[in-house]
Image (cartoon, rainbow, N blue to C red; front, side):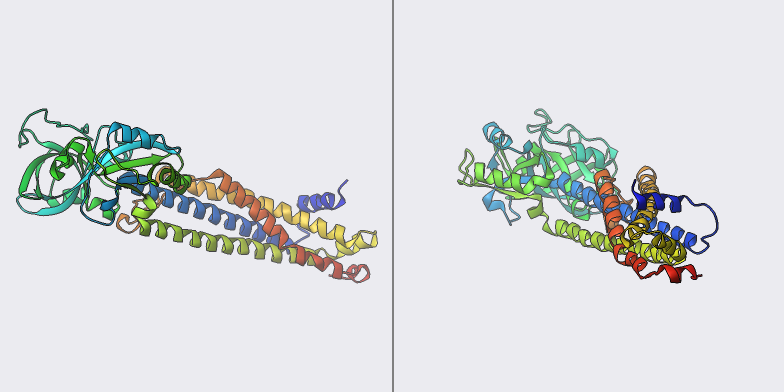
Length: 426
């Protein structure tokens, strides 16, 4: 029989009021562990939710990897690549790539009778993954996107406009609603005007996107840029696993682009990951990890200090019991292990209440969105949370181990207690 565990269970099971000092100390220690764990669970859930929400918004507009003309990198002028079927199939065949879709960027100006606004038209084709756009849509509906003339031979006019999806920011600035006709002006060798029907309004709360991007047909953007045939600005690639994004890009370069891969028209291709396209966003998200480690350290310290103070009080109040055990032949190590087991029981109760409190707060926020945020500052209208059960389990195990280890030193206090003196201790 494990003698220290047996005695610890008996101490833990006592319900009388003889221990007038240690009982409040036990409650305080339990509360310290519970609060510390709950704060850690909520912190990790909020940071994970925030990072993944922002990441998904950036990826929604920029994909995971872009393949484009090497001369387009770092310039505002979009040079074309010939993204024919053979090239798209070759890209899709690269291990780790799950989807390939074409896009074209075209600069233009939206104008009403009262105001105008410079925007970027992003033309997308029928193969484009529109799941993010559907999630971001707040009014209207997404049109069917085309890579050929959607008007089927009709001339563009107020009666036969192209479809466009604009942001809520643009709609407010230009006083537009779903169903309105808006004119777009494109400046090149000559100024051209096209009529657009506002089919939908989206909102991402990401200023860099909401202030700039309109979504329209690939054909329209290609026509404005003078692209012919299968030409477009490039291809956006989605990967199977975002955590392996860099490895997939390295594989793409080594298998496909490293030898100076050319398209069918002789244009040299290169790739940009979403980290390279929006470095400041991801650097900012990485800084959140520092805050998480600071909070985790503070909460573990809180749990450890409350457990140390609680254990010292328990040992001092049970000095007579320790003396009796020593008089009966119990070794210091056995008595130390007894109190460490008792501390594990206290920590266990604290972990139970901490899990209930922390997971409860996370689920409450997830279901109700009760904590609201300023979307202009935080890019989201409510605090996003993501409950990762393996991480919650890891937090529990780490808290239990660290809180127990910090008690090893204070437990040596029992070796300072002498049986003869402890009999007279009050």
